[in-house]
Length: 162
Image (tube, rainbow, N blue to C red; front, top):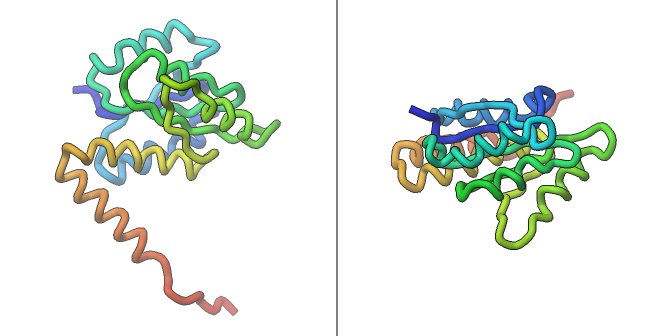
């Protein structure tokens, strides 16, 4: 059986960021497939993946991309599945180039755009889990417990570290 979520990225170097999405999903007990699917270097692989993603059993795609960041938009143009785009922080423009590329999709090709870097990867995983939780009461409970634990981990008062 195919995992319900696909995490795709344009290159191996994107894994440093996208592993946070995979780790978050694993903590929630949600299976995810991870793969490199470059919009520029492996366009045939991208087309085959995105065109067949729904038939393969995926429910949500999380796409991380740096630089020109065409991967999330191209994936969204080739599938009707929800696509969440994670801008990867770049050395040149600190990920703003990726953010602008992903967030400026034309009307009719939606991509849910997240924050740049680690926070975006974690939030993409949480959004994907939330989508799945709509029809999975057990996952809904795990997601609620995760959020409760996060809330309870915030101290009410600062600690004196002196």
